[in-house]
Image 1 (tube, rainbow, N blue to C red):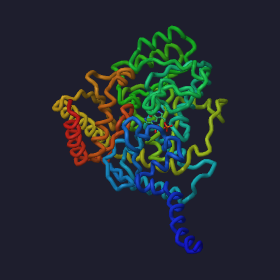
Image 2: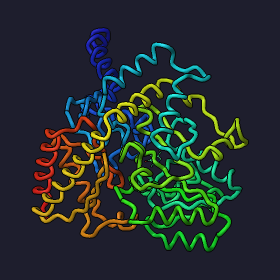
Image 3: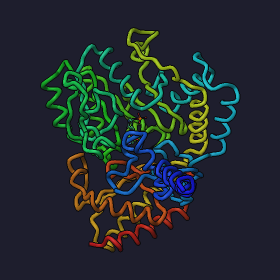
Image 4: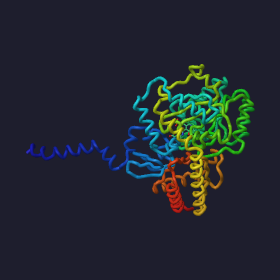
Length: 456
Ligand code: KE4
């Protein structure tokens, strides 16, 4: 009797145990999203906070392929991509010559821990495209490049204070994670816990476009400011352009007080023009921070500038900086190929990118007017931004007053129509050489549909 009972019960008992044990995978399958799994393994389920969709709701996309202007997610849905990796993909995803360059580089080794010829190719190419850069040091992220720029500026001037602008984002190094934009603002931590006040007490913040506030700091600290660090065009609180003369006045103040002007062109470099924002405004910063496009999609950062300053970096000078994978030849193969293709396609490429961003933002404004939706837009070269705001946005405080709920609803309405914008109002949007009239038409149709559904 007992044996019979056992034989009957055991298989069922086993099945129940099996399914309980594998429930997580069921949940995974039921939810049809890797995100549930990721959240048990990765903080917030993401490797960079802004991807988490916390500002727009829903779950982040899990991309399993990208080609040209399009992303394809794990559910085989296609999206016109206006994130582009947050800037690097200016030629579109999986450009055959860039992919080939990476494959060729990988075939001759992955990393050497010593020098390779492409380091010279990259430095020479960047110097040619950005003449303010007389020497270049490769690193592995924009954060690392900005951190190095701060150390170099402080070491070279023997001063500690820095001026940065509220809402500008220069990566997450301690000294600069103060009143920062991008993901820091998106998640409400513009000045993060875990950073000793001693580390940030010399980081002075003022509103972007407020030259009076900068002058006041120089009056207060005439001989203590090592550098003024900024995104010359702000791409980490939406997209905000410098007001006429602002950059020139900053440069004059730096020269007057023997401080250094540092342009963070991680995002704008080779994006808004072949020579970056500094070529648009004809300004020669003392130091430039780079990233994104110069890696062609692979991990990268770089710092460049006046030779007398750069020579102070180890080993030619005492200011230490280093990196195991700095100047990795796969990154340089992707980056030099990307830059060379941008150079060869210029000036037509940047005219094309600018035409696209201006046509798109003009179409967005027309649709917003038709549907009585308050919209401000900005476009420069291959990047654009928009705010749901009655008034123009010229700084961080005004950006924060824009309608975040409307942004969230618009984002989701566009996503449902196969258009992927950055999942935060505190980001800029990016187009590529692969975005054409078909993508423009589809996007503007989707904008019209979205605004009709959101109409005030
Ligand atoms: P990375 O350390 O993320 O490579 O670069 C930092 C950085 C520095 N300077 C500027 C002007 C930047 O825009 C960035 C990084 N940009 C953000 C997008 N707004 C990266 C996206 C993310 O954090 O996931």
